[in-house]
Image (cartoon, rainbow, N blue to C red; front, side, top):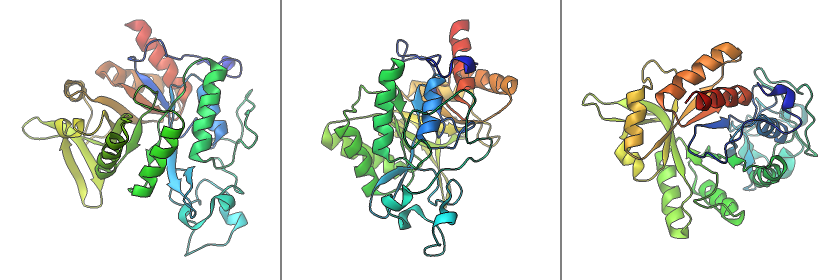
Length: 318
């Protein structure tokens, strides 16, 4: 859907209806182009996504960069340029200047290019800093005529990372009214972010990631995934320090149901699901629709065009 229009002006877009379900480009248009690149983010924006998602890691010299893994191995050509350090290629063992010499390579179904699309960035397949992603989202917002949201994830439970995220966002003008969510799998990180936000009087929306849980007494919530297993928190507890939960879809142990989403909404929480990753268009449309019919508020999609098409069809059907 919308592929023919991708270079011209994009499609979808929902600035006039912020309460309708949101499409979040999972690591950019990661099903089509190298993940966490300006090229991948831009393609997703052209496809009409509501949010781009930069996962964040810290370099050796304390710079926030957009990369999912805590190592450079899977998604870059680091092994061609550098010898291993401390037995591997951890992001934290390389300076920003060194990371900037790398090229992000395709993974999964991603390719090095997308038909009819030419990235506008000077270095579209370099590892971007968080500041570069923020600046790019603002520039693209002006280009496409709608606000492009950002959805950063603190990949490390680290106060330094928390401070860095909040500092960049605040300096870039983000606040409670901005199109933004900050996410983490660590409830301690989300709680700490809220405490710091309160102190700075800048309460940007927070999302706790995990799995859906349902206690024997019917109390629903989100399970925080840790080394000791799944720690369940009730929706009431989560609502004390966050605005939403991001839960894994298609989990047979902890399935998401309409009743589950209704309970989250009753507690004042949004429900976002990850990851919608079906490459087949018909299968993807069915999967998106199933969760949209349950009342899901946001969907992390590897193929953002599919998410936008499904969301727009759902909204039209209402």
